[in-house]
Image (cartoon, rainbow, N blue to C red; front, side):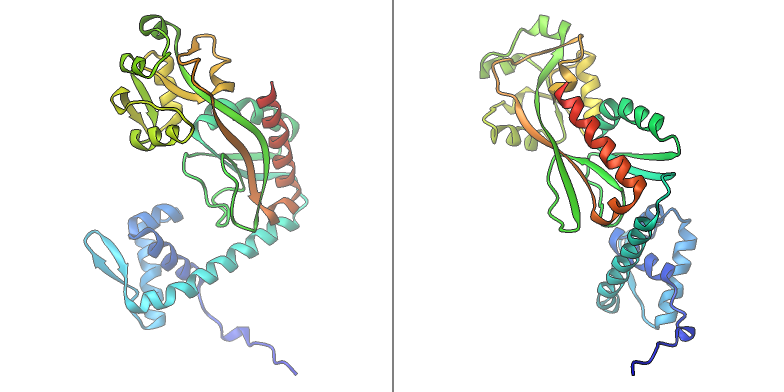
Length: 303
């Protein structure tokens, strides 16, 4: 007969393990404290308490950061398993809820979060005012496995088996400029015409130009006038007449102050995926938001 575990003897503190895990992943106490929303002294005390409890030194200082000691490196895999188990428990608990009220976190690029989602989210809140929204406007993909977001609008299909994704549309992007800018520079009809325009790239210029070449679009590096890490800021710079930028045709074509600057170039295709953790969608609130976004985003692309 299998004996039941005496849980009264277990005093392990998950908060200390989490502090250890996040500090190892972030590489410093300050970064880990920000990630966890804790004061740095509080986080430091949790790490110190775990080291005392285990009787080992987990970190050693390396410049301004921290590195795992051999003992810490041996234990980090166990801490990750505990983190994954805690996340699985949280997801399963969310899935049991039938209450439509509560928080839903949605991740999208800053361009989509700023220009595409607002009218959709307004209609969503009108349909279900008890739902509270948190929007992560970030051009880096959020980690849905660790619940950085519940639902993500992405341009790629996830590889993780526990994530589900729905392909909403095959969007296209093209080069745009403000009407007055285009009247001064003229249209870009040949490769040499790029010497007369100022290209604003979303991200590092070298990576952007290489990506375009894979679609058969060749642009000289000398055309680059500005690199911008924000798609939304890049688009506003283009709208203000600073130069030429590439954007979703659904956004560019609807702006009467803008025009396509290189009409002879082929549009650059990209897919739009809606992604979430499989278990999240057993939750009524999450399922409602997922289905609402899928329908609205699909309609916005076909409009």
